[in-house]
Image (cartoon, rainbow, N blue to C red):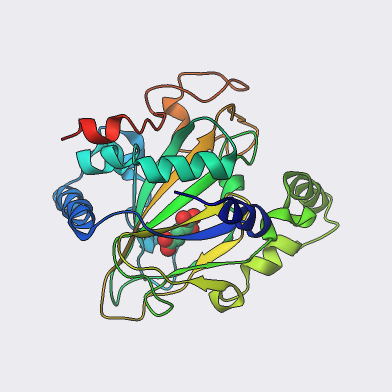
Length: 282
Ligand SMILES: O=C(O)CCC(=O)C(=O)O
């Protein structure tokens, strides 16, 4: 499932190009599920969970008027996505990368870049967008279409997750320096301005996945092909990750927390991955 060498590569570089985890039938099930969700959204939407409204259309936040669509917590909407949380290979690899006995979902999301009407993601570190206390969090980025440089594949900056300038302490210092007007632009801001080509492209085929650490800088460029570029991202936490409302305390998922600030994030909105459940869905 995973070699020690791959774990070491991840620890050193902050990402891992893994390879195939789903067959094309399983990928098609996910695409079909996404199509059903898109139909619901086009017909007025489903507001049964606050996060279903989040990020469907980033046009309003984006003066260029181009669109990335983002659908949070697909696992609550479609059984194929719920089943995927328990995929034995994905779960096992994540436990090895995070050196933990079990992983728990923070959230999942489909990020879809439709042809001809999409935008790019600038270099960012995911961790600082989340109300969580420690960077023991890894994303599994699963391609639902072949992801190439032209279609907007993931680009990573190797080893950036180990760079002290971009660590939680470095981030704190940067915020304080900005508050005191000592700096207007931080090292992180400078990285965010770089084009995706500054990073290393991770081209993968539909059904394959790559993993990235929550402090690893990553970006995806605009999809300039006539094809869809859909990816499903599952973000998992190691055992013990706690709520930290002093960071991103206004995150859309906070209203669903069943635990208090400083407690381990568990509860029905954050299922533990259990490979035994993978077969139970059939
Ligand atoms: O799929 C994309 O285009 C961006 C994904 C991303 O930034 C992430 O997985 O954190």
